[in-house]
Amino acid sequence: MNIVNEDVRGILQIGAGKGEEFFSYAHLVNNIICFEPVEEEFQYLYANVSRSPYRTYTLLSSYVVGNITGEVDFFIGNQNCNSSLLDINMDINAKNAHSTQTKLKAITLDDFFAQNELNIKNYNMIYMDVQGAEHLVLEGAKDTLQHIDYIFMEVSYKPLYNGTKTFEDMISYLDSLGYEMVLHNPFFGDINNDCFQGDILARRKNHLFWSVKES
Image (cartoon, rainbow, N blue to C red; front, side, top):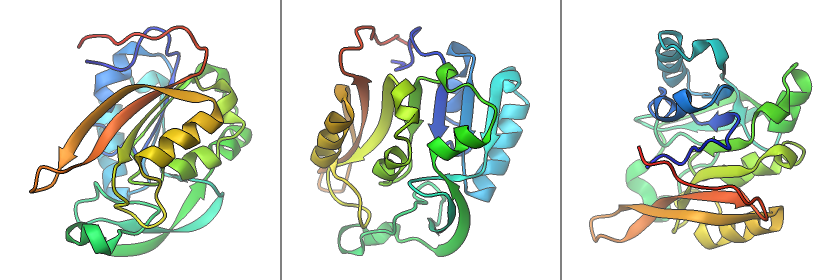
């Protein structure tokens, strides 16, 4: 199943990693911006996109995307996949403790578009995996969200990171921004088979077009 449909004009992928998910949707849209702040991951992403047929309409950025523009503390995971603006909640997620804290350059989506000659109307989907900092991305995107019809993100049912929003809080926050959940896929559990992470797709309320393409 692919959550990108023909109504999606362009994608802002935040937390793109090495580009693993990029190749699942890149052939379906004509405008892509990928953000990945972890240097090792960004180098893989750059190499993978550069060798692809989608490089002509894909922009890459190494900014951290959040709710402020400037220098921020950023936490690096041992395997990079859990790197985040937010530190690990050691009470319930100690096995995934971050290995390094560093300073990185951050930008809000609103400032990114204000500083670059890009037409925001070409992008109507946010696709993000930012390890608990999803609400910070949205806080910095008040103007950008006026053009966003779809938001795809990872959610947590437990506070895996300090200061994160859990599933219920995120659904409420999305509702306050004018979005409703149309897809929910719990997928990750612990050794007791207790599911604590999943993916959701939210759609702008009253935006009538939505269907899921089978992959």
